Image (tube, rainbow, N blue to C red; front, side, top):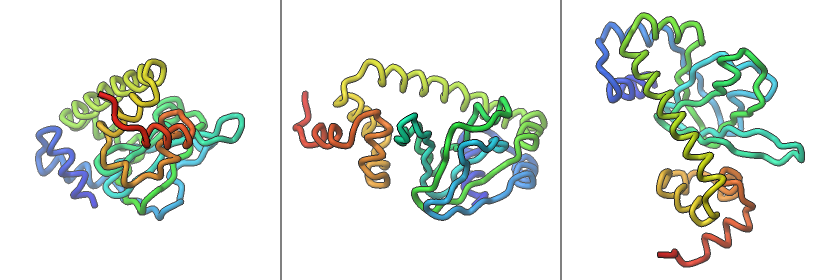
Length: 192
């Protein structure tokens, strides 16, 4: 499955065969079955993880024990807890598998060494961090400014494939609405 990651890298930058061989030598493959955890709350996240196959979700449990989904990760996306990774603190996040998955993983120290050795990889990672920051800001803006209808429309425009891969109650959690509210919004004719 490293070939999926290799194709991803080549679509983002110019890597030599030597670069790719070095990157592969520092990676390992983790296969996960549906309902397995990649990360559990309380553990310290120490990896960079690229999803080569499957679908994962990142969530936390609120004070009432309700799941609050923050992110889905599918093919060609990254998964993990950046706060735990950077600060070395226990994660408040759970990441579990919704569809059998294959993840290309790197130990934190190995991946950071690769970024120093391969400037093109560092460039790709910096671009990814900037794009993630922009996406997070958009998500915050949508959460505090959009109506439920606008949140749902934005979700299906950005992630049309997830509609067939993720149960509606999880999409509702991601959007911050109840399943009943989402069902009502979905049953209404589209507003123009």
